Image (cartoon, rainbow, N blue to C red; front, side, top):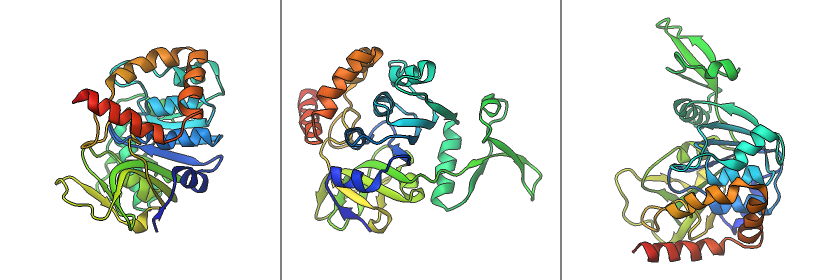
Length: 286
């Protein structure tokens, strides 16, 4: 049953050291504010799951929150490498990072299986590729009905799912619009969940044809955090801050510049800063 909380309260209650955590959002609605709160609260030994980990995972890895990453593709979209991710893999800084790599299709199917309460995902995939050589969790099974050989991987069942959405009503029902990733499946697969939203309203109002509503009884905590996806975008609220994605390449390239930026912009600031940045960027874009 959804509880309306502050961001600090929600993360403190839901995310624990050693948890498996999925922060999901595809191209937009990436839960940056929630990720920053995890960093501020000093969570450690996390296993992170995500399709296409990008800047917020680079920050979590660089701040020493993460021991293990389960993912499909990782990088700064349209720019290049994630330097804190790369430093952890190549040099063990700030600590060694264990990797479990999958295809996009496998990740989506694993979330779907987790949401359905199944132990594994079975699908057509990993034919002619090399990932099975480096990931022992990729198996082959034979369909008992057709004899077809299929791929199988464990279902994703995170301890916590964290997503961002446009709106929630006061009962805790959540509306997601625009490009949909696996946010719904991640929440349904998880034991606990935190959903940050642009605003909490009396009525969710009109919605687009591809809108998803997560009912309040599927959600643990709902938190109003305007700008909570910034610098990614939230359809209908603010655009993507492309200049910041480019700037991050230089910020994160060296350890000292990364740590200085994190101190000034994360450790010494709260979630209210996201609303200010998002408003300024939207005004500039208009």
